[in-house]
Length: 265
Ligand SMILES: [Zn+2]
Ligand SMILES: [Zn+2]
Image (cartoon, rainbow, N blue to C red; front, top):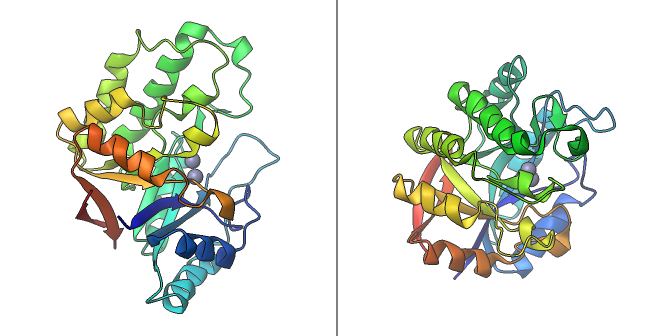
């Protein structure tokens, strides 16, 4: 089937040097019918070395121009990935979400409790508390923040914690988070970067969370490579599609003007 890559980055993101055209051309070459460009906006990111704040007017202008320039060859979906944090940051996220008429917003958690997942010093944390703290943070945020369409890489924290994953004391809070997502009519994704990070079968979202979402009645799923360079464009797309099928999903969501359209998976 044609591919629909709903999570990708370009040099409008602090952590990518890829030109927009290089990313789009890689997508065309790999049979991508719809490409959502979802560059980072991560207000109040704790690591001072990174400022994930794009030039919004320039960014949106680029999205519109590329949509027109490539029309007929590939559909460019105007997206953004918003890094959600609680407190005052939520207001910034909300403002950015409404500042331009995006087609799709990926709502992601790259931080929790004032730490970013990447540089957090897990050795100073209570092993048993890290996962509950992360999902409780998600719960606090998603109880208040609704300006997104799909939650990015649900259990991405699995990639960063330096000790053996033990979800036994936090599945109830994960369920509470998922319940909010489903009841708000939002989606989740399979983010294929987990394969590139050597996470094996531990996909983002992981199998048990895909099942949890579907059993709660969730139907909105997307696939995103999270490519930050052309080589990773649409990576492992078919593999992700197969995982969705084996979890009982029959449709993939595409977005325009923040409204999902289902296509047969
Ligand atoms: Zn992300
Ligand atoms: Zn991303």
